[in-house]
Length: 141
Image (cartoon, rainbow, N blue to C red; front, top):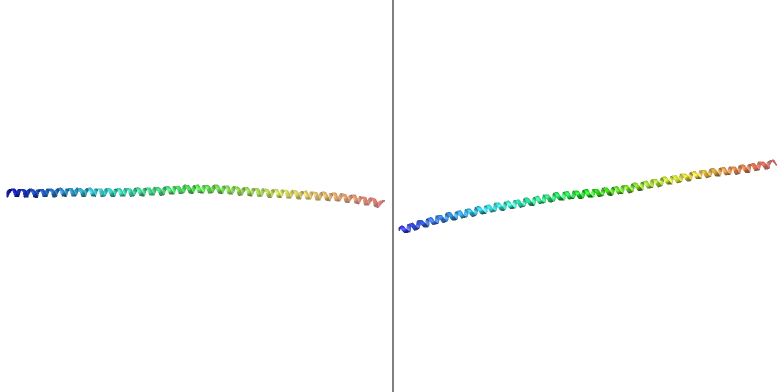
């Protein structure tokens, strides 16, 4: 009996040791799984934060690019407006110059016409005086 009691005690001790070892192994496995789960969660959060940062940088770059495109567009529009203004001002100046030249030519023509009328009047006056003097001369003879 002594041997059986010893073996029973040893078996009980082995079962206790196995139970403790299995418990320790399970706790270690659980700790490792929790650690891996926390690590995976951190990696997921890090990946999410990297994705958010990339998205934010993309938005900032798009906004800057849009601003640059807008500035380029407005600079192009400003240049176009300046060209249009230059063409219109040139056209207006040319029209004004043409009108002034036309008025100058018209004034010159009017002056020449007035001079020719004066010359014609003077010539007619001379012709009339000559005819009058001829008539007066005939009247005395």
